[in-house]
Every structure is written in C-alpha cells, then in structure tokens.
Length: 447
Image (cartoon, rainbow, N blue to C red; front, side, top):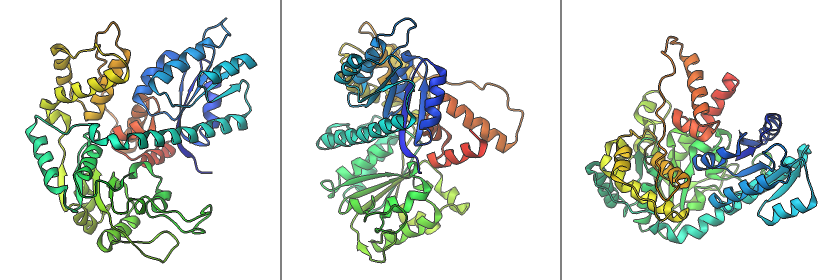
C-alpha cells in the first residue's frame, strides 16, 4: 500500500501515546509529527503545512474536563479555520463529544483507540482537508491579480522584471533559476498573467513532491488497465493545462527516461497517456524552474543536453534576497500588512530598528523565510507592539574531523530533520534535495 501524501500532527503529553500513534499512522501517511506540549502548536503550525491535527483533550494532571483540548482547538481554528481536528481523550462522555463536534472537531476518539478506527478517522480527515484546500484555492482564483504586486527597488530584480515583461506575451519556453524561496512560483504565475493565455489554466507541477514511480502517470496520465489500480482513464496534469501554461518546478528532479518523453512532447506538441498509443495534440506554454545547476547535471549525464537547450529559450536568473537588500523593507511591509489583517492586529508597526534587524540578517531561506518570520511575529506579538521572532543562525556544533562523505551525509540529514522537527519538506528544501531523494537517504541510513 502506497503512503498517502499528507502531514499529520499528533499533540499529546503522553510520550507512549505519541510513539504508538506515530508508528501506526506512519504506515499510511508520508509525514507524522508529534508534540508533547500544546504551547508549541502555534509556532509549529506557522512553520509547517499540516493536513490534520490529532489533539488530546487533557494536558493538566487532575483536570479531566476536556477544556484544554477545546481551548487549543479554538486556537488552531483561529489560524486555520478549515483544518480538520480529531480530539482524543481517555475520559469520553457523550456530552463532551457533542460539545467538541459542535465547536468544530471533525471526529472524536476514545483512548485506548482501535487502530483501524484511528486510521479511518484520520484518512477521512485528510480527504476533507484536501477538499477544503481546493475550495479555498478556487475561491481565491479571481483575486490572483491582487495577491501581490511585483515591484522592486533593486537594480538586479528590476532587470528580471523587465525580462519577464518582454517574454510574457510570447510562447517562448522560460527557465527560472534561483535558490529556494526566491519567488520562482510568483514569477511564473506573473508570466502567465501577462500572457495571452491568462484566462486559461495555470498548472503548477512540483516534481520534487511526486514519487518517481508516479512521475509518468501524474504528468502524462494513463489509460484504464495500464497498471494495477488503473480503474479508469486519467488525464495527466500536463493535459489538464490545455491552452494554458504548465509550470514544471524542480525540473532537475525529472528521471532520465522521462526527460526523453518530455523532450518529445515539447518538440512535437503531442502527448500519449501511459498504456495508450493514441497521440493527443497539446497546446500549452511551458515554464521551468530549478535551484539546481543544470549545466553541471548535463556534464554529469544526469540531465539531457538537448532537453536543457530546449527548455531555456529564455533563461532568467533570480537574485537571492541578500543580493537585493533594497527590497527587504518593501517585502517586509507587504507581509506585515497582510498578516495584520489576517490575524486582526491592526496596530503593529515596523519601526526603523526592527527594519535594521531584518536587513542585517542573511535570509538563507530568502523571501519564503522572511514571509514566515513576519507571520510568526504577528501571531505571537502582544500589547500592540511588533516583536520580531528572528530565525536563529545555527553555529557549528563541533569542528569537522571526519571527512568520510557518507558519514557526513548522514550527519547533515539528521541535523536538517532536527532543525525542522521532522518536517520532510522543509528538511529536503534545506538540504537541496527532493522529498523522494531525502526519503531514499533516510531509508539508507535507517532514519
């Protein structure tokens, strides 16, 4: 059974409960994180995308009313109103269950639980979470033009925006290069919005989040009966972008055998589903992005040279945030205004001293890290005064004396997982790996 791509957060003050629930749910879901202190929930939620929360109802000894669970559920709901929350307690009463469900819980589980019941409840909650997220995306689809304004005080970034302005009206393939968090998705969407295809689909495909075994089926679709569990015809993500734009993110993760198929698709504009000989005419515009050095990948025979030349008709290098310090204030004020409104903190202001603090930090995670920093700060600020919660620059824990590459790789993976409290997506991003590549290395080292 393939694991479902979902992030489950379990919150309970009993370490045995956390261990048991995590071991069981890890069989079915790609990420399972645990917290033993409810006070850690809000910080964790601002730094990670969670699909379902499994929450204990009693955290204080001697208090068995379940009010702790209801309180923390309401706190989570202020942050993520549509996030499914499953409540757990060893002191189950019908009245408490009814109150919890009335207050927004998606389900209620008594301890000790039945494993099959726990799985069924969490699995249903994951499906609900996905539907809620899709509905939210559709509700916002008509507001895309107002989500951000592309402006810059940086000369480097102004040159990038001018390149985008020139290339957007054409159908030329565009390759966006830059570190993680530099805004490649935003720029790709901007290219689409400035093109003649703007009223057609914009399909984002993150190749770093798709299992290698599913690449071909997800991208190109499949015919009924093409493989086990192919119970019906399925149009792939690329086909669903017909007449619009396909944004292939992390293109460096595409396996060599599929690079050949993608090259043929770009050249001939014809697509064949898996298990089907029929060719379908395709009319889409391609935008690609990666943080990898594709020239090096070509030299190492990990990326086809002919595909590289085909995808970079126009190559745009996006500067890191540290290379465009003039924009830190502009971006910080934008994020602050957005989160002041979202979290009802209208009186928070970014003073000159706080702005200087932001400008003195190197931002290795670029714009995404700045975004998270401002959101976290707004959520946890008190007394109508903004308190910046800056990321901590980790010092080297010890001098490197062992130069064995394999052993150092294991150490770095452990540090990344520790830094991001087990969040696979963030750890992989920090290490410059795809999720699939990180999973393979974790399995290799027994992590």
